[in-house]
Length: 275
Length: 283
Image (cartoon, rainbow over all chains, first blue to last red; front, side):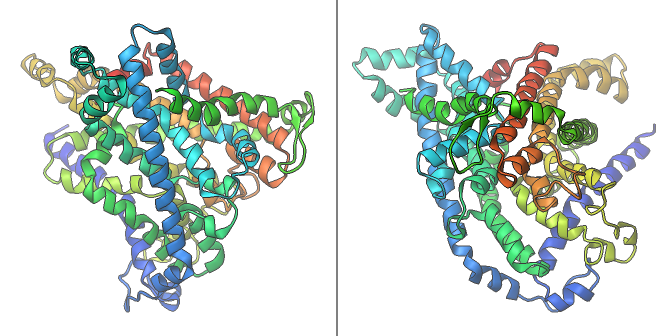
């Protein structure tokens, strides 16, 4: 194959995939600013004649603030719980990994945890949440979401903490620092970059999670955004532009995170999975 | 100090793993009292043609998803890892599907593929104006396409990271030996990427066992039309939370657990690769 032909093929394939990614996104955004009449009659790929924000007003008036707040609360709480619990566990595993059979067992438990699909255990989780009298509360989403983020978070933090020379820890212990001091003033600052990365990753998973909210909550005022999208869809019915406005609005916060923390997000998505 | 993580994950991860097996032997409608059912749920699930159809659909989604996603993700990864001029701009665009929730993606594609008001009404695209999600013959393939749309960027990212870690010296040595581009790809890039390929494959296979959100939304919660997209997780949800038979649903879930654990063991054993190595080297 000549270089020119190969370049042309690569460019063609890249453009084709770009079109497959971009055209739906373009269609969603333009549809969200069309009037219903325009949506029914216009060429779907032409720019809208008279863009309107009416659909966004409809969505915002339809309880969007509540759903957004629920999502923010659930995501922040779940991520905070995961981060604190995982950092403590990773610290124990690394500090005592070689000496203690127990901490090796913990490590294997979290490894196993990576292979447990949450869909497969949703029924017992549902039973537990009912028995804990948490059904239809935000806590019902927060606790299982945090629990399922723990394995990957622990493993990434362990891989990072392992690179910290043991002599650093020992030096602090010799100086009379307790384990908590060592964790707070040495380990925590050292793993900060990894912690930020994994938090961003966990946050994206919790934010976009659908199964836990679907099964573990019921009332509209407890709905988080992905669940709220299905409520909007039921409520708007054939009003597709309004549904698309809801889709766009629900994505904006993640877009903001992406713009602010692009490096961490990319690193988080590949961390632990790349060789 | 490890206690909070252990309690949290034990309570919601490990206990439910045992619980799902126990519940598969129970009679429970999801609200009332739990009763003993013995092997009745298993007999019902294993003799139900619907279970086997769901299993077959799950395998089909798994295999076809792998076949579609792997070559495209590898090609995109190669492109993104290269020095092409417009790479940075494309990377931002490629990333978009990763930010969207499965629900947002499902609703968008459902509307986009509507035969009357979707993209098929655009000039030149009338060949798309068919019931891609509404026809039992097409729905599963449409679902596989949308799954690929959602997940290819993630796997491309994995390949990109893997390709960047291949030492440049290998390529320089090969160039001195006169190896052409194809030879370099076959003899350097592919073997060097073997761990990435195994990781990506494992995630795709285990992931496709559990595709739920997207198919739930695309089929309006039914796994339809008819049962055309009722993969195992959908069958479990419908049996448990719509037909209120948690015992039978738990039996289906147990099949999922066993298949998931089995697949990850199999792919890691076959390749002599453990997640532990990968994770220790990650970051």
